[in-house]
Image 1 (cartoon, rainbow, N blue to C red):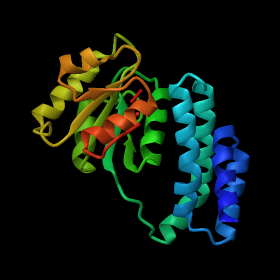
Image 2: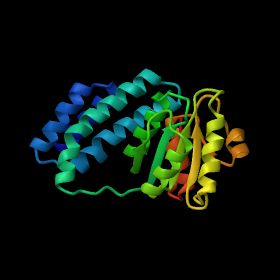
Image 3: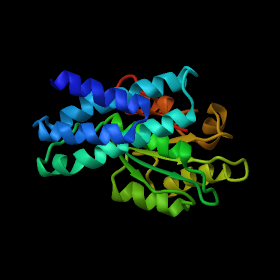
Length: 222
């Protein structure tokens, strides 16, 4: 029965059906299924599949957004019970993520955050229009392993360099990896500003994060 339930959760995420995913999450709890199993055996495989298909060009941004929403609705049901049971997932690393000051674009950043979170990373999303000192404060506060800096405009991408410089000035560059993403960013831009890596999409960001932390293959930064 659990296998059938997991398959249903996976399909609900793939279909972007938030109503179904929430209902199946409630059924999982009612049936005594550990919330961690519902997440790892149902929801995560569904979102991973959508991410893979997005990377292959078979699915598109609206599909990713619907899948992420379905995933979140199910998580809203499961997380209180997860906390009550004090079930702890293995944390692959701690990530602080945000969009640079002057830029209010967040769709790509949100997808990256969701993919990292479902892949076992502890994600702290600072939102949009984030000043460099806030990235520094959050990196210290959360003992971040990675700082992800998004910029969607050529006029704001210089803010990614400023964040790298601010982390260096605070003495954090030896302990924190910096990844950048967004339409104007590139591998060469990351190298130029002293970042540790770049990814063009959410799937690539997970893989990059895992690689930087020595956790094997990975998936995501957009």
